[in-house]
Image 1 (tube, chains in turn purple, yellow):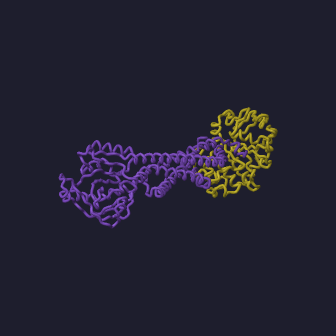
Image 2 (cartoon, one colour):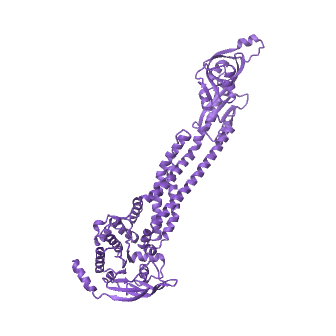
Image 3 (cartoon, helix red, strand yellow):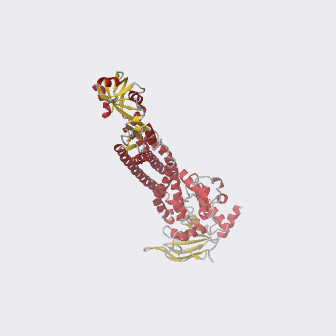
Length: 387
Length: 234
């Protein structure tokens, strides 16, 4: 048998046959590693999770025509979107606003891509349904109550094109009319409640102008810095478009993320310290319990280096096992937290697994330093005599 | 030249002279008992001979080398290479089997050898108990494992501290027979005891009182006792 084999036999049998004491140390390490791994997983996944949460608060980038001479159209919008990573783009809602009349009253309609609007404005509360096909309208709550519209009612939108003639008859003859069914009433608590929302196809049919927008709202899962760099890229490469990050949303997101990450970091450090104290206490108790064994080993010719190697070997093996258990449990812990808090599953971070094991081993090693030092100070002549 | 020689050795703790100007010699292959009442300095003497302590005054020559001035690290090396220790309380590692306990001494000395460790256990009549933990062995068996561990590295001196102090009469006789066999095989034995029955089977007994060597008794019947043992062993 080689010395190395005997060394491993000694440290493994020491752990295996002295289970109760070692289980306490292993539990401390595994719990520490679990929280460490879980928190670090959350730490890295928080930006993604929080980004998704923040997307519920509306668009965080707006595209506008750079000048009134070059309107925002399908082509410029598509070119601008090429500067935004597809994986980060949550939704795009181009808007076109027109003045129309309903029941002889002047109102403003907002035409948009309803599917895009659902993604950029997920906080909108709709009684009834979003318009799903041409001929359906969603009425802002203020307008609905003021004009007594309810879901299922029909209304006629009248569009009056610009004409050079002042003749009322000519103007009356140029009017274009379309009947809509109210599919839903929109409640946002904001200015949107004063609008009528119709699909883009309908406004194009009413006005005869296609593929032109006043503004496009974008929801992007990105930090404030990323948003700034994206909007810079759009401004540089698509000069017809003015891209603006919605600072209020982006800044709030960055502030909350920074604070949350700082909190997670702080908790992780505290957990590591507590783990170290717990392991150090347990190992100190182990060293005290094993004073006779250490004295015997020294009497048999073990050098201080031998004693350090054996104690550290046991500690590091415990750290490794605790780290392996903790990294697995930590992912489960992070998954539960993510499901409870963010209502979505967490992404597995492969690097966290070896990192947790290495940190557990290092923390256990540091925690063993003091007990190991105390072990090397054992005087065999005194301890073996029982004095 | 003697294997071990103490020259005017004293161990002083403040005003207390645990050992006071002790001189003695032990030759290779000798069986010497160190006897005395509690507090007579037996343990201090054992610790000094066993390289676990250093004298305050005097010289301790082991194999012609003065070990009294050696560093702790060197004393550890000398103890590992030249001394085999047997303890009253056996001091086996409780989570290792009898075989592994013997191999631990090999591990610190040179290279663990399972076959050789088994032979050492067989020598003390414990081959069939090799895989047992200390808790599964009787006191006598534990002491024999301790003896096997002391023998395994072929030490120049086997130093036993009250080896039968925790044993009943039957086990005491078994252990003394093992010592007789070791003596026959040429081992040098130094047995520290307060028990006259254990001391009188040795070839020579030195008596300590109040840290001083007061008496030296030669066992006139030693050769005859050994011859009878040899006859019985056959």
